[in-house]
Amino acid sequence: LAKTTQPISMDSYEGQEVNITCSHNNIATNDYITWYQQFPSQGPRFIIQGYKTKVKNEVASLFIPADRKSSTLSLPRVSLSDTAVYYCLVGPRYSSASKIIFGSGTRLSIRP
Amino acid sequence: DTGVSQDPRHKITKRGQNVTFRCDPISEHNRLYWYRQTLGQGPEFLTYFQNEAQLEKSRLLSDRFSAERPKGSFSTLEIQRTEQGDSAMYLCASSFNTDTQYFGPGTRLTVL
Image (cartoon, rainbow over all chains, first blue to last red; front, side):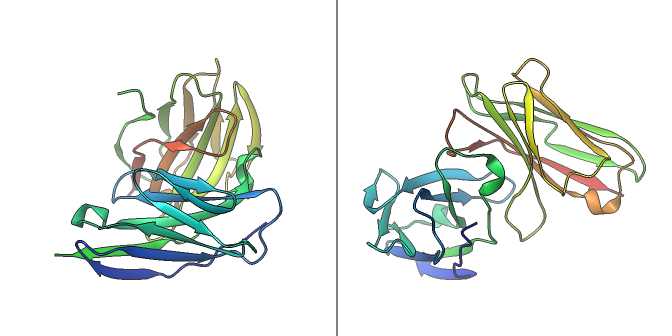
């Protein structure tokens, strides 16, 4: 099972671009990379998923290098409401649930 | 709102009592998952249903825990003879044949 490593916490300011990097050295060929966001007292919310290169949606971008051993979640022009915990997950796209493991996440704090 | 719903949102109980939580998934989702989350940690997988069949159970799911999804729609999670260590947020998620899981708001259990 691919294990992920991400920073415990990060701080930034409103209007800045924030990049959170996740390491997954043992990623398997059929593994996808998924990021979730969680606010206090709420369930995690799906942000973005990718397999290789770059994926972009209305919320974030996901950059995945050719070796796929890491990935970077990029949040453009953050606001105070982006303060949350961000989880990087690695697992097969079609699989049993137990192969998807949440780590401790990255606690992102945005300051005015 | 057609997202995942959970009831109750909060439950306080005394040690030794039984509690039951309910999850209503997104209507077209055939997979339903239960997770447990303690303070400062990411969600931990407990069990998973595909339609009405319970296909996987984590070692975290002791014999005091039981989950059902009788008609392949809503699910219940029961904890018998609660212990203080059961205090946590219990999260439900659903998906349709992918690992993109959509989470509910959770039920916060406090065992006194």
